[in-house]
Image 1 (cartoon, rainbow, N blue to C red):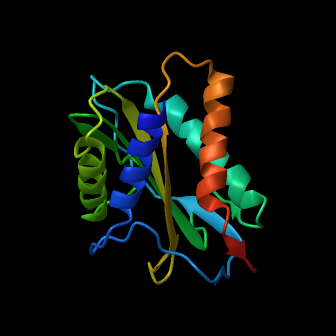
Image 2 (cartoon, rainbow, N blue to C red; image 1 turned 60 degrees about the vertical axis):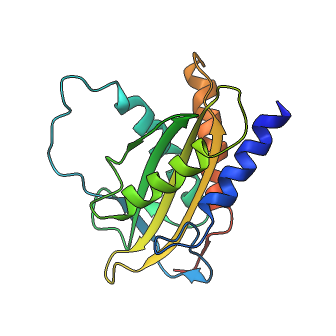
Image 3 (cartoon, one colour; image 1 turned 120 degrees about the vertical axis):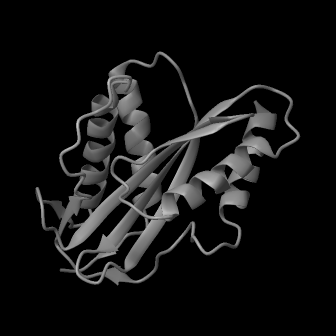
Length: 183
């Protein structure tokens, strides 16, 4: 397991490297009391799509609990802060992203490229699967990125839903631990 921890550390360092797409943005107090998620519009899932709805529900619930404990409360639409999140999964050879709630723009692809480089450019010969959750907090009026954070974990298959939800909550809490809110 030690080589895998070294791989994750290397991945985190690679994601934190210089680029026009920041991996970590933060600092300062967020002056708001409400948030909402990126508006995805009405788009039916493709016929080949996996069951993402359950995972999105777990992620959004975890983010809502974490932000709620800091004073930001979820509204259906029009929050003072927009929350966007990106899921990147990968192994020694490839990466994939789920950007349903990340919005449109070049950031998602640039972040996936960083993760791909971190996942594939290592000396570890052992097979692994990892997932990275990126969360952005964006000012809904100015569209200024207030906070970007991420966490990477090994992917564990066949977890019961309650254990999966607990892991997702742990990740959301880690990413959002330094968010300070003042209404």
